[in-house]
Amino acid sequence: MAKKFTIPEFTIPSSMASGLLGRDIAADTPLDKWPEDPFRTTSVEIKALGGEMLAAIRGDAGGAIVRVDPEGLSDHEVCTLYWNLFTTLFRPVPQYSSGELIYPVEVKAGAAETSHYSSSNKAGNYHTDGTLLPELPDVAFLFGLSAARGGETLLMDVNNLVQQLTRINPAHVAELSRPVPFDVKDQIAGIRIKRQPVLKRTADGYELRYVRMYIEQAFAAEDMPVPAELLAAMDDFDEVSSAAAGDAEAVLLERGVGLLWDNRRMLHGRRPFQETTSNRRLRRIYGVQDDGRAN
Image (cartoon, rainbow, N blue to C red; front, side, top):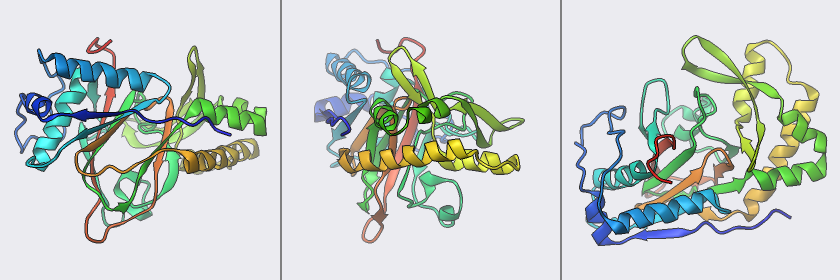
């Protein structure tokens, strides 16, 4: 059975929320022009919260839930608050070749027929974010502006998944550790296909890069069938992931609720949702930790 874990939760009190709004970002700032420099603060409270969240992300849970009371805060103020908190820890990076640093994750007409999972109401499809970018983001952050019925986000630790997959067939781990083609969906200039392993062994365990659709589309673009061994490995990996998702902690990203996780280690997905009285509106940020913002 997969290892169970609980994602630690952190609450931003009103005094800290006021401090995190100390850097104003104009409401008409383009999505690719949000400030990438760190939010500078002397608040011991904010620094302590950031340190505790970072420890949770690096620790067994691989992620952190954060909550702020949204009462009295506009959508833009919620975004500003969480942007400033995020930039105390990580350097934001573009999510697409068009440069968006903060991205609306909302259902868009016709998205169900495309590969844009973030713009559809598809469920399942457990994946890693940013596999089509030149470099995989270290962390991903989603926070809610409004919630639909359902749509909870799920996180699964790749190391637990590898243990389960090894029990089924150790050859699957070896197969997924070889470079395979990924369709990068025109996100890297001059490159249609990028080859990278789904699983990469590190000193701390495994890193994960996985979007099955992009792999299958890459083989199709090269007019090649997906090798039987790779198909079998992905089938069993998906089965293991689906079973683990059934036991995973489900996080409903209501207004003011955020989820930050280690994108190299955690597989994620979501439950089905219905938009009836309220739409599912999230914002997403990717980041890397390469400039000493937090240690």
